[in-house]
Image (cartoon, rainbow, N blue to C red; front, side):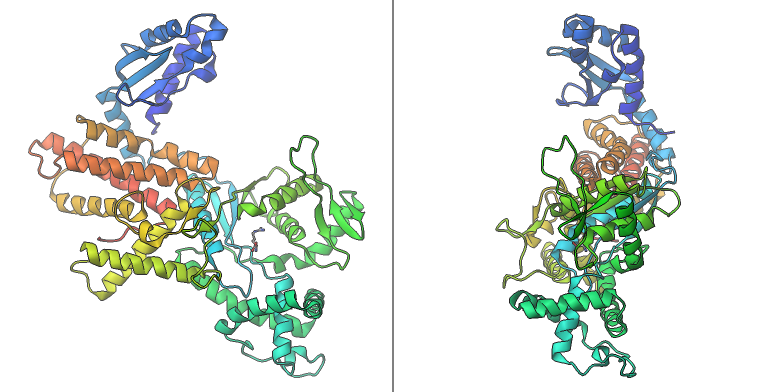
Amino acid sequence: MFQSPASRIDAKLAVVFQSLGLPAHLARVQPSDRPELGDLQCNGALGGARDLRRAPRLIAEDIASCLRGDPAFASVEVAGPGFVNLRLSTDFLAACAADMAADDRLGIADEGRGRLVILDFGGPNVAKPLHVGHLRSLVLGESLRRIHAALGWRTHADAHLGDWGLQMGMLSAAIRHRAPELAYFQPASGQPYPANPPVTLQELERLYPEAAAACRADPERMAEARSDTAALQAGDPGLLALWHALRALSLEAQVADFRELGIVFDALDGESDVRDAIAPLVERLLASGVARQSDGALVVDVAEPDDCHDVPPLLLAKSDGAALYATTDLATLEARAAMSGLARVVYVVDQRQALHFAQVFRAAGKAGIAPGVELLHAGFGTVNGRDGKPFKTRDGGVAKLTDLLDEAVERAAARIDESGHGAGLDDAGRRSLARQVGIGAVKFADLSGDRLSGYVFDADRLVAFEGRTGPYLQYACVRLRSLLDKAAGFASGPVVPVLDEERDLLLSCLGFAGAVSEAGRELQPGILAEYAFGVAQRFSRFYAACAVIGEPDPTVRASRLGLCVLTRRVLETSLDLLGMDVPPRM
Ligand code: ARG
């Protein structure tokens, strides 16, 4: 079984620390802050000094003398106030490489053990085209799904469509104003409802902002929208038929956008799917005392004594009885909790909804909904324009997701032509390469860094082939592929790193499983993106310094080929977990 170098060394340290009477939790190594002094360092002597009442430098000397002589190390040195610097031996690294190469999972731990995780992401509202705000939820959510699957979880991706709220009433009111004669609005006329939706997709996408603006400007229109929403939720057959038609129309377009991003949901359930569960849930919460009346509304108190911010009560029902966002989320969670083996739900939603999720999670706890299920909000910052403010189109409107992707693909196509990367491809080949590069570039930019911070969408920068970009990573994969294709006649063999560039590359490959675990634990695909970028950089350095096919010594050549095979597996798996394509050539 593969174990990373760091965890093997941790195990050795644990023995040493115990023999010296040092606390076990300090027996840890980390990558060295100063790689010129070692591969790994252990700072445990500093933490143990108080307990042992000895100078940390002396404790470090003791640790070092226990470790010296172990064949895992080429050198063990004490530095500064009590750091132990460890340089790993070639034999040890070669043994780690052999174990990793022999493992189908590249050492990734089976942390999920078949438990079920639901990933709630995407979350588009019916009648609104996917816009820039959905990009991060989709890209982060899909990557988190893949990372969980790699870690042994069963995954269930659910878009949780916003299909049951006020926007539906706004739309029906707007359509009634344009065409009051439609059968949807003729109660009990006996007329059949139209077979086709009353608007085209393009009209629907224009209609929604108009309808919302009309409601904002005109209180009477707003009242109409509210009463339509209430009638729809109460089961008015005409409004329900209209709702079905509009929902299907917009969902078809949204699914096409998901597909463009390589995302297939296991379920496209929506708020409407739990509509019948809401009234009984509200009643139960009231009866059990979890909810209380407040000014005609029903609320659940969710503040806790040690809150440092005010956490207002969750609004469960308003006086008009309309379904609310938080209530729908509670009812949805209750329905999900019935899925067998459910252990975790991850909501990949804009950080501006952090309070909403805090309220929902606490209310679920009080109400005994989904007990024992880990509820996590993986929030994220906004996609910004070059001015640092949330991204807008040139005329100041909300940017549609497809427009954003098209722009990146267009820039990628231009880059490919300028740089000669597309040489020899026919038109269709160039187009498909530009798609893979453009969309890969957007995904990488979206995933790298801390998800909580926003990032600047600068199509030109993110499609560059140099620097911290998706295309740089893709290009490393393509080079590896073509190198290994050309080397098909040569045997690869055990990896025995000799030169610094080989060691560095191997060491970074050996960190793969750790990076996947950490990305999963922190719900941060950015950790994996950053890791993969580091591997690609070290591969470039290795490839510049070391001959592979041209290496005359067959043992060295076999080792370098083995290292390339491992690097390729690590990079391709990383890209796959980030949801990025590897183009066949570049
Ligand atoms: N439809 C919501 C919105 O547009 C996002 C849904 C997120 N998921 C959830 N379970 N609340 O803001």
